[in-house]
Amino acid sequence: MGEEVRKHPIIICRCRDVTLDDVLKAIDEGCEDLECIKRRLGLGMGPCQGRTCIPLVIGIMARRLGKKPDELLIPKPRAPVTPIPVSLLLKSVDVKGEGEGGDENA
Amino acid sequence: MREEVEVLIIGAGISGLAIAYSLQKRGVKDILILDESYIGAGSTGRCATGIRASFTSKEHVVLMKHSIDLWKKYAAGELGRAGLYYDQSGYVWVATRDESAEFFEKLAKLHNSLGVNTKIIGIDELKELVPPMKVDGVAGAMFDPTAGKSYPFDTIFAFLKLVKGRGAEVVTRVKVTKILTSSGKVTGVEVEGGKIIKASTVVVAAGSGSRELLGSVGVKLPIENIPRHALITEPYKEAFKPLVIDWDTPGVPYIVQSKEGGFFMGRDVEEKPELPLTSQRIDFMPKAVKPLTKFFPWLRNIRVLRYWVGYYVTTPDHHPVYGPVKEVEGLYIAAGYSGHGYMMGPITGELLAEWILNRKPHIPEAERLTLDRFERGALIKELAVIG
Image (cartoon, rainbow over all chains, first blue to last red; front, top):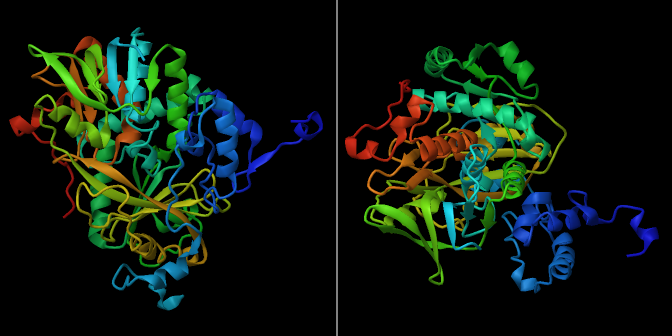
C-alpha cells in the first residue's frame, strides 16, 4: 500500500474504529481465524455485525496467512441481527406479570 | 504439535490458561493446552464479566476473596501490561421486599466475618452509586465494594501471550476423544483422527465437555450444562459503575455497563439442560429487560445489539469440582463452576498448580471441593439461606 495512504489510519471496522494496523498486529500476534480476531478486536460485534469489516478481514487474513477463505471460520451472527429498541421488544412478546413497570407506561 | 508432554491441559478457557500460568511460575515448562474450538469459546467468553466474593457459602466467599486478591495482583503486573484489567467497581444488591433487606443484613455479617467488607447501604448511598436509578419501591440495598468486572477476552489473550511466551504450546481445533490410562495411572489422550499424545499429568478444564471426557475413563462427573442467556445494548456514555442485581424478581435480573459502554443484562429463564447453544430464545430479551425497567425506565429508549447463549456447567451443590481424581493417578479436574468459572480463574490456576506439584492446596476450603465429596455425601452447604 502506498506510503501516502499509510500516513493515515485505515479504518476496517466503522462500528468499533478498528484499523488495518490493528488487524495486521492481531494476525501477527497469533489470531489465525475470524472467531479469534472478532473477540480480540471487537470486529463484527458492533451494530452492523460485521457486514462491512468481515469481508475485508477475510481478504486480509487469507493473504497474510496463505489460507483459503473457508478455512477462516466465519462468525455466526447474533440475534436480533440489527439493533432493536427495547420498547419494541417489550411489545413483541407477552411479558405480562414479569416484574413491575410494564410497557403500558411506554 | 508435540507427541509427549509433562502436563496436558484440555480446555483453553480461563481455567486451563490460568493453570498453565501458575504451573509455569512454579517451574513447569513442558505444557500443552488443547481446545476443540477457539480460545475462550466456551463459558469463559460467554460470561457477563462480573467478579465478586459476596456469595452465600464459606467456600465460595473464601476462594473468591483470594481470587480477587489475584485479579488485582495480576492486573498490576505483567498480565496487566499484556491487557488484563480488574475494574473494582462493586456489586449493588437491591431488595424490594423487607424480608430480603433483612436477609442482606445476615449476608453482610457473614461476608464481614470472612473478611469481605460488604455493607448495607441507604437510599442516598444507592443513588450516589447508581445515579440514573429510580429508587421507588426499594426496601434495602447491599454493596460489595471488592467486586468488579473484567472483559474475558482481554484476560485470556493476556494469559495466552504469557504462557506461550514461556514455552507452553496452545493448539486449537483439536478435539480430545479419550483419556488413556494404564494400571490406574493416566498415560495420555487420544485426539480425533486417532493420534495419541503421551502425558503423565492430564487436567480436564473443559467446561461443558468435561463430563464426556471423564466418562471415557469411567469417572462420573455430576454436571448439567444449563443454557443461560445474556444480551448487550448499543454503547452509551458511562452511566454507572457497579453491577446491579434485582434480587427480588424471579430469575434475579442484573445489569452492568461494559468498558465500551454497552449495557449487559441477564436473567435466569427456565431452560432444559443440554440444549445446544444455538437454541436461541427471542423471548429472553424482553424477559430480561422488563423487570429492570422499573429501576431504569430509560432502558426502553435504547437498543439491544446482540444476544447470546452460554452454559452454566452446574454441579448438584453449585460449587466447582477441583483437584485430583482418586481412582486415576495423574488425572485432575477443574470444572463445574455453576456460573462462576471466569471470576474464579486466577485462584483455580493456583489451586490446581499446588495440587499437581505439592498434592495440597494452600486454602483448606478448597480441599472440600474434590470429586469424592459426591460419593461421601459431603456436599457444600449454603450458610445463609433465603427464608
